[in-house]
Amino acid sequence: MTGEPEETENQRLTRNVNELLGELRVAQAGVQILFGFLLTVVFTDAFRHASGFEKAVHLCAVLLAVLSTVLLSAPAAWHRILFRRGARAEILNAGNRSVIAGLVCLAGAVTLTVALIAKVVYGPISMAVVGVLAGGAFAVVWFVLPRRLDP
Image 1 (cartoon, rainbow, N blue to C red):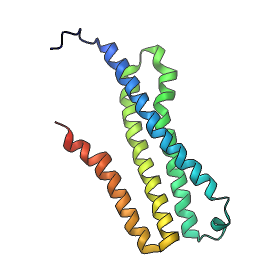
Image 2 (image 1 turned 180 degrees about the vertical axis):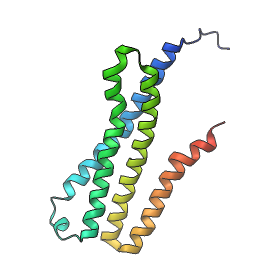
Image 3 (image 1 turned 30 degrees about the vertical axis):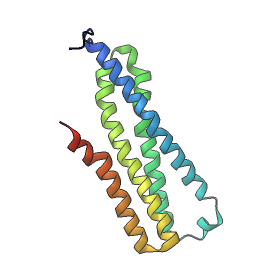
């Protein structure tokens, strides 16, 4: 025991919601940078000459980035709309699920983007290798390791 008074349930929920919103700032910055990059690509001459497959992969990456933006910003919107109603527990529960889904979409968008870059630069075999490595890295570091670290 540290000698500090214990948190009330409301204080704990408030702290947890604030922590969630703070974590979102980090993830949202990555999504915004990726989304900006993906948007500029379509205005290049090289993109006009891309294959239908490359354009489809690019569009999938864009859509995953959009979905990631929606899911990662949802808890902030929910907090703004619901916090005065004392719905912190609901915001926290739904927000946690939304953030995890948003991170999955972000991992997918980044994976598709680097795989597409590998295809354009080195060919389809590189695309497969880079895609598997990037997707695997996200899966292991973001989702497998935390489960192993959980006591």
